[in-house]
Image (cartoon, rainbow, N blue to C red; front, side, top):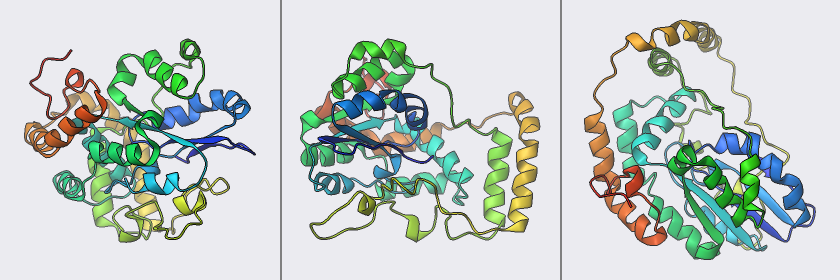
Length: 306
C-alpha cells in the first residue's frame, strides 16, 4: 500500500503515523485519514502515514525517529502496536505474498534475532526524539474492540473534536488474507522460482529508510516521496507470472476447502514468541501504562486484566 500523504503548503507541524504493519494502517490511509484532510490543512498540520517508517518485513527502524526530528518543524508521532503472537504470523504471510522465501520457523527466529517488534525500543526512540507528550501509542486490539474510542484518541491527539469518531466510516478488511492452501502454494512458488531484485529477502531492501548523514534532511531522504507513491515495477518473469495467475484463479476453490483443513497446533511457536518478547513488553508497559494484560501480550499472559 502506498503511503497516505496529506500535504500542506505551509505546515506549522507534521504528524507521522509510522505503523506498525498489520495494525489497520491501510484502512486508516484509505478510509479515515482522507476525511480529516481539510481540517488538518486549516490548522496547519501535515499528516504522513507510512508504515515503512517503523521498519520492513525483517527489521525495525527506531533510528528513524531522530531523523524525523531533524526535519525542523514541530512534530508528533502515532505508533500502533499489535500483540506479537498475532503480529508475527500476520506479517509472515504478507511477507510470503510479497515473495518471501523463509519458512515460518526461520522467519520467526530471524525477527527475534533482528530485534523486530521490540516495541519498548521503538517507543523510547520516539519519546527521546519528540518528547513523550508528542507521541501517541495505541494498541490494534483496542481498535478491534472499541474502534470509536481508538479513533477518538487519534482525533484528540490531532487537536480535532473526538466526537467526530462517531461519524467514522465502518471498518472493512482492505487486505484480505489468503486461504491456507493459497498460502502454502505461494510459499512453494517463491521457493521454486528464481528470486527477483525487489524480493523482501534481498539485503538492499532490509531498511526502507536511507542512511542519511549531515544536517540537510528532506522527506525524500527519509523514504517519504509525495510524487513517487508507487513501488518500482518488478522485472517480468513469464514462468512465475503464469504460476501466479493459476494460483489466483484457484483461490476461490481453495477458500471453499478451508473448513476441511486441520490447522496445526501452534503452541510451540506461540511460546517461543512469548519467551522472546516478555521482557520487552514489561518495559513497554512501564513506559506507557498501556493495558497489555487485557490483551494477553507476552509477559502479561497470566496477569489479571484491569
